[in-house]
Amino acid sequence: MILLTQSGGFLGPIAKILGWIFNGLFELTANFGIQNVGLAIILFTIVVKLLMLPLTVKQMKFSKLSSIMNPELMAIQKKYKGKSDQESMTKMNEEQQAVYAKYGTSPTGGCLQLIIQMPILFALYRVIQNIPAYVSSVKVLFENMLGGANGLMAQANFAEIMAENGFSGDFTTVNTAIDAMNMFSTAQWEQLKEIFPSCAGLISENVSSLYGMYDFFGINLAVAPTLTSIAILIPVLTALTQWISMKTVGNNNTTDSDNPAAQSMKTMNTIMPIMTGFIAFSLPSGLGLYWIATAVCQTIQQLLLNVYFNKIDMDELVKKNVEKANAKRAKKGLPPQTLSTKANTNTRNIQNQNMQNIQKKLEETRQKNLDKVEEIKKSTNYYNEGSNKGSLASKANMVAKYNEKVNKK
Image 1: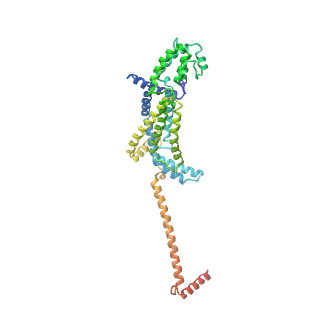
Image 2: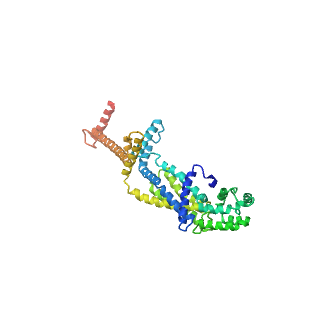
């Protein structure tokens, strides 16, 4: 878990920006009389998805181009299969690079978007897991319980007593105590009131407000779901919505039944939702709600993008990609990339070439058979020459001709 006292690092600035957005959405709904963490999580997910839409579109463009390029790339790999010498490897790389250049992309075309998205996704988890660090209205309720002359931190030996009673975490400062208490269950809050009876009223008042903020249709988003509560819907819906989302994305890509990587991805698309559902049992329900909202948004987004891309002329898309690639080369002072004739080989040409080779072999076999028939016919005529076919004379003549041939050899 990311603590309030550990908000720095590489993800710190990104988490702060996302936390500012989350807090803004929470305060916006509060202006309408709704202070609810669940609603803020859903709105937060939608906003972040919209902000990341340009990256998603670029990634899907690369995916569409990949579905066209892959047959050509696989044909090149097949061409050099079993060859490991340096010259063959160089030629194969050149031909593959020519294919990428033809479509105005590169082998790392889809990686950049993922590299940019990964820190954002990790920062998102940081915000959702540690809401008091970023939402001032939630944090102040913890500070009310801990601070002040009658607060928990003012109680003698507060940190030692918490440790003696089995509470894990650091209770020496307000921030570290908030991090530890953020994950408290109902039973732990009741235990805390028994240990510090003088603070029981203060705890009850602020915890009641916390429950109101974290309550989402009867589910406490601050604690992990259990099998006996309505919160069990969170992990179930987490697995279901993620499976639907992966199915939607998977249907958008053409998979090759002979491609081990494609088969492995298909298996992962089935296993991952189940694993995520089990993980959701051990984490606060708020994180599970975020996964559900993300999967639903992603499914809707994917369906809309599918409609959009189905209307796009792929030849026009390729043309624009090439123009952009050449524009980037021009900025670097490089000439436009000239495509090798090898790059003009597409799947249809490869299939036509294969068909021509098959037809050529069939024609050669047919001609050989005709030549054999003609040779047999000439041989028969040679032996039957000068006699009636099938007569004793023709047979005797055949023997004589054969002996004559043998003697000449």
